Length: 174
Image 1 (cartoon, rainbow, N blue to C red):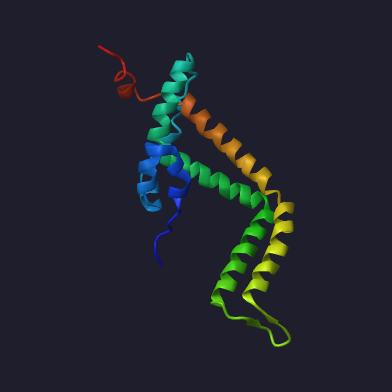
Image 2: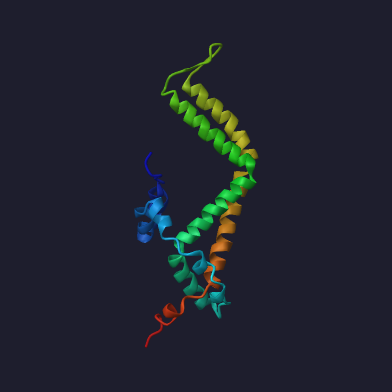
């Protein structure tokens, strides 16, 4: 089984060259850049920014420096949201399992002995079951919560965590 490939090109191609480094990385190299938890949650470097310019400077630095850690936070929040919304998890497993099962037929009909179903009928049946149960699982609420929770967590951390001392003076003109 090969490595997991996510079609990030389809999402990031609209943003120009800004995300070229993200597109070129695989998942394993992305999470190989994780910073130590002691550095990520360094309480001694937490402080209130003096002004909005300092917030911007901190966010710019921390978003690039801790990008893998923030991706891990996003993954953990995704897992939490799926485990707290079991209906949505059930629908995702149902659709994934249904598509996998229909794909295993390789275009042949499903013969149960008392009934025969074509792949078109199976896809239609899966669609008829998945749409109402999917809408009852409130996926839009979960997605909005996930976006909000990630934004508050990531930008809150990035704005309150001060830069290391060796990098704080590198921006100043001498």
